[in-house]
Amino acid sequence: MATSENRQMSIRTRVISVVSTIGAITVFVQSLYVQRINTPTGRMIIIMDGEQRLRVLDWEDHEPRMQRLLRRHYGEIHLREEVRPTAVVHVLQAYFDGDLVALRGLPTATNGTDFQRAVWDALRHIAPGETISYGMLAELIGQPTAVRAVGLANGANPIAIVVPCHRVIGANGTLTGYGGGLKRKRWLLAHERARSPRSVSAPECERKRIDKAQYLGSPLLPGGACPDSKVPLPNPERSVRLNSKLRPTRA
Image 1: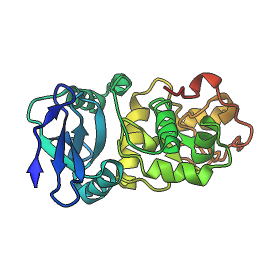
Image 2: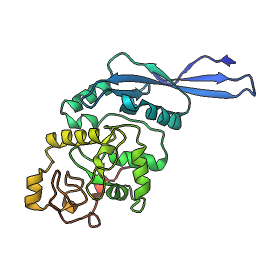
Image 3: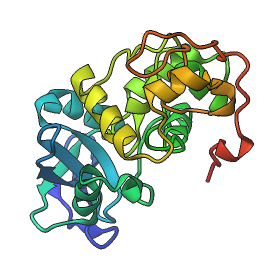
Image 4: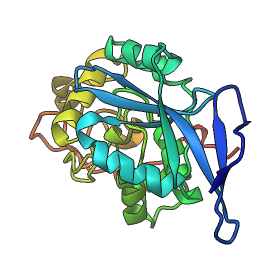
């Protein structure tokens, strides 16, 4: 097997062309860069490309799942350790230090299907301190009947926190599942609600009986329950009108 010279595709992303002696098949292997960072939720793995676009963010104790997602989305890849501090690391540190808006401008890139990317794009429109249901997320992408497919796409999200699938909960107000574990989902939501000016406390929620239709994606849970409260609210799941400004635009 003969290997051709690496051709530089960007500043630091390379594609290696490997030519097999059997059938002269050319196989392309993409190089991505990996870093690890300690966070209050556990040690995390960052994978980015040569343009420092975030490709994967997951917890170290879920690395086998991360490897499966990488193979599914990118096929054969070559991971290179990045030792120098990157913008992704600085942004994540700022988020965990309480700067919730630090994540907004972080560039990401994914290799999912068009439908998956539409769901992942919509997730980035959910503000810190807010939650929405899977049904609301389906409406947000213009696919109100695709609730189950939206849930599957949400679960296949390769970029935790930055693409905030943790902000999606069940229609009855339950946290449902989370790839990083429910303990981390609770921590992330509490971290954001404690620092978000848009958060509504449980006592205020119970006192005003705020309608979800007037407060899209607020920390009021979509099933009609207040955070950490058993006091029910009217269920506005079907009456919510999505703000057209929140609809993701396609590039």
